[in-house]
Image 1 (cartoon, rainbow, N blue to C red):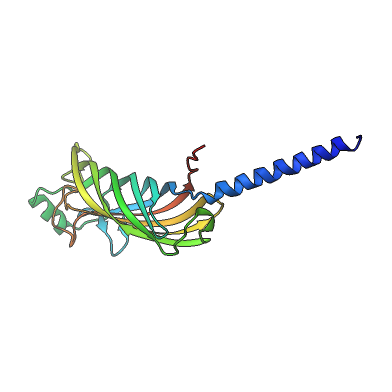
Image 2: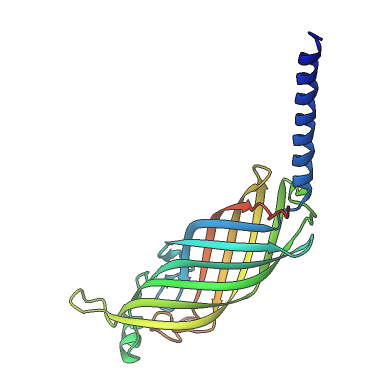
Length: 234
């Protein structure tokens, strides 16, 4: 009888440990199909008064994004992204170009921000059925459709005495994103992500027609991605 109680304690502890392990194993079999991500990094705006892009004479500004992703299948995700990118004109336009801008009543400077929201399908290069089975590295990318609100202060000269005018513009855009992710834990990835926001306008900066293309934005961000715990029905 003296040995019975310690044996019962040992057996109970083993049973509890086995049960906990079985529950954890069962829990991880339920795929975590929702991700939240936070990204931050440098960006620039391609605008008519944005600078001399071929000679890398333009302004680099910060950008921040937050995204929610739903895994639809082993291969396909559906992602909603919102964020803000700061924009600023730059470069050193020559006198001939300044005269042309003056003749067209075009803005010489534009400073402000763009707030955006988009939805896009994304494809994983290496498909996986469960978050625990994903590869250490993966490539992902896709394109979608979004809307942005751009708020800027613009001037029609380089004079320090000119009071800038406030301008607001809403436009649609096509986001193109691609990233390389690295698994740093069972529920956590870190990724390098590049994004192009191809707008439907050439008037983000109050200056139209002096570049070959419309006004667009580009971002390079470091992104933290976390797989969210699923709701388990009791």
